[in-house]
Amino acid sequence: MNRRISASMLAADFCTLRDELAKVSSADLLHFDVMDGNFVPNISFGLPVIEAVSRCSDLPLDVHLMIEKPDRYLEAFAAVKPEFITVHYEAVVHLQRTLGRIRELGCKAGVSLNPHTPLDGLRYVLDDLDLILIMTVNPGFGGQAFIPAMLDKIRHCRELIGSASIEIQVDGGVTAENVGILAQAGATNFVAGSAIFTADNPAEYIEKMRRA
Ligand code: DX5
Ligand code: ZN
Image 1 (cartoon, rainbow, N blue to C red):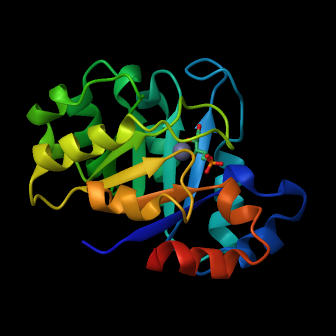
Image 2 (image 1 turned 120 degrees about the vertical axis):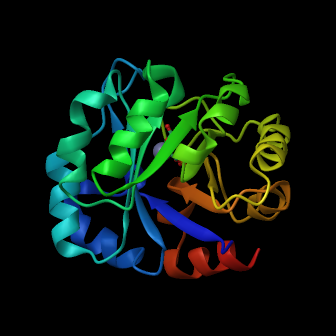
Image 3 (image 1 turned 135 degrees about the vertical axis):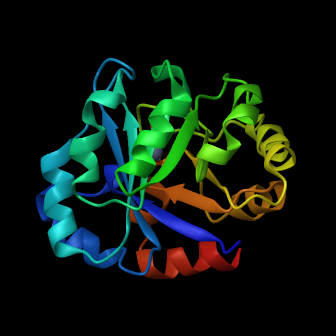
């Protein structure tokens, strides 16, 4: 599976969003962390911002819902036609049904796991999944340090899914320095916010992440 880089818009300057989008136009996806101040301690942005971006970028959208009861909003987010909608394992009660609903709405279905959440339940919903997001920090804030114990979790996730065409996404503290080791462990999709947006040349940085 090809390595894909997803630029996390949480780290963008929202004052100049159009310019920020131009900086990351060579990324494979645009990642949006929707936070509700409930599932995570922080509040970020919501649908109006993602909808505005969808009108001025051709990149596929990658929506990461860090919210309680995400089922209530699936239809609304699907309306902006993202490639992925990812919900949190810890925030849904009937995961298999939720994933099915995301696909029914025409999107690829992702599930995200907080660092301490075990992988095991995913064994029973592999057929319903397009992406597994291994959180490599506790969700809620950009700019945190990667948690090294997550490397083992990525390896176990790779063992669990074998060669099924499910992307393994990593999110939090991902940089050009650790992308190689993360890829070796089995990750295929790399979310990075602060590393890309604070780089002197974000396009070159994205290229560096691809090659690392
Ligand atoms: C963390 C978010 C990430 C965040 C990553 O709660 O899920 O997507 O934007 O930010 P960096 O790359 O700065 O760790
Ligand atoms: Zn995210």
